[in-house]
Length: 470
Image (cartoon, rainbow, N blue to C red; front, side, top):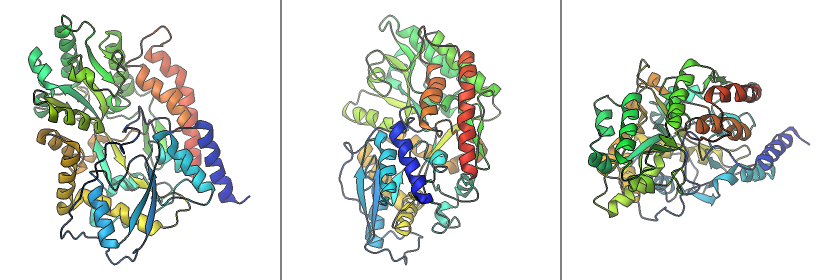
């Protein structure tokens, strides 16, 4: 058996053994299992838009094979770039959709069978875990970091280099990828401060966050005896506001901060919410991504990925009495800056891809949809048409998706969910979800959990770092 066959067979064995990519439900930038059911097929007009891209690349007739959980040819934020790609380069995408839990298993089968797709969308642990498994190709020979579309993010991309090679070119950057959604109408009814106003006045802190939750519960008890302050998954978002990620990365190696005092302080704050019965992962019969508790005024905040706001906005579009808004996670009053977690979205090119050049042209087109003023305007119109945001919602959502609005030193990229699937399930999820939410006879204190899971986490990180060095 050749070396390449051994590598891909190992990937296949891993995927079949673990079965899922583990962290998407609770991870740093959680996404719905598939958006295909909500995607609308509508026309995008790119007019006379001309992008600053190498239009002389001869990829005419190329068919880029893509596998993922959503359809880029229909998704509101991607379709304008896809339209430009097809009309300018006379190339297209062939799309195969799978459930989130099936992607890595399917990719392993295709690679092992010599039928690699040209593009795959990112899983939480695509980088760096699967880079160490030789699942993806380095793209240095195909991508130009000096091109205008990468100018404002080149430092981020360089931070993701492994042994001097670049596999990972994120086209989207999400500041506070997990948000706190609330029913502003209910807050006004209860006489509570508006979190968005607090955020605008730089008064949105752990303390005011706690005050909003405590008052919401207290003032709602007569009408809603089981009212709560927070439900949904917080993942690492709250930890990151301290400026210290649970797992950091430097020079292509992961760094474990589990025993850092900042992490301890954040987790202790969340544990205190649980002890006071202010937070729960689920609200009654509702799951951690359901929006009814907010719409019905049963909960103060819903902690969830930013993709969820569109479900609320579509409900609001049909009911003018609803007033739903969201805010990023609050500032740590003990931190020297307002730190926020950041996540990214990328397409990666799998090992053995047949048309790497065309795949990279598409990645460039998608990135340009975030930077080129004309195409960005088209993207804005496309997103508003599909997702029904209010102008206020879209203004804040857009602001949080532009890293140029923030200083790089204020943004924290946490690799807590970028490790192997078993560690995600058995360690990260328990540390990040049991601490603030789960309260039963089997639940340990945060301190006990940290001591119990620490060795397992450290062992996993050492194994990943060892593979990344090779």
